[in-house]
Length: 227
Image (cartoon, rainbow, N blue to C red):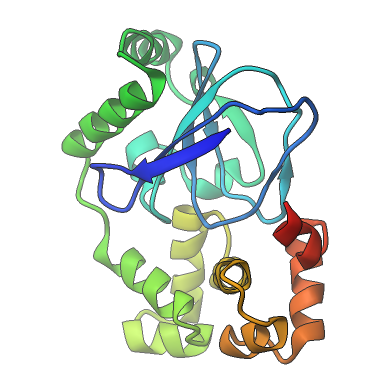
């Protein structure tokens, strides 16, 4: 069973998941990075360019999903170093430091609360999020073209690409596709007809929407809606 709630950390989501059935799962790209807890260990989920198929390990999972672009400063690792990867926190931080944080999370009333407290503590010690990154996400999520976004931010296309790699794990065109996928899924799950969903989210037509979903999610839109 999956459940989530808004975090006290701005823009973040705290979630838990205990699979009800054995077997692999599918995590869709969303422009985010997560700090994960499983079986007493801490892991980091990097940004995905395609659906990540889980191994279906039994037991409870917990996580904090950070707002796009904010995790690298908190976890002290550029997002593109973790693109399409899941790694143990001990591979990113000195082992003793990672173990101390894991012990803190494990001592909390529940792992999700412990992860949230850890994230809040890291945010208090880190520099405030770069407001430009929030503007990038807002512009691309509103369907603004990449070139227009770069011009409006006054940073140029190449500099925007470099900033996006470090913050989101991939360039602005990929980020725009990922955000568009999430917008389309939200509309379709609310019952919006697929042709209207395609038109409202910037696809050329319903066939274009279907191709993009299959490319990014590794399955069909109808299968995602049934799931």
